[in-house]
Image (cartoon, rainbow, N blue to C red; front, side):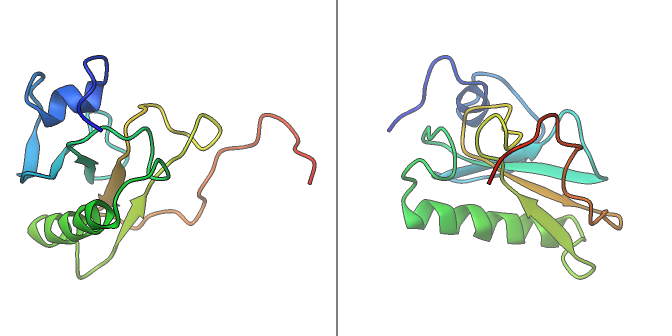
Length: 124
């Protein structure tokens, strides 16, 4: 896969749109979320385009994303107290940008409540 011209995160990862970058290498880019949900809210994205983390991303790329999340957590001073890594898949999962990414959240005690009130009932 390669970068997509219509993808916001591809544009950021390839510096077609600038952002507040905190890490970058040949495979992964990390930048601050423009609408942070915690004092530290960084997005870690692969430079190659994948719609979500379940879109056939190579294991080495997924491992790089977690390694970068760990490094950024240490650099941001939140590693020792704890942090949250979140990935959303699909519309019902809360994914708003169709490019695989991991949210790194920390810098305060995070609620255990992981979701919003359901808008519809689901049958099992």
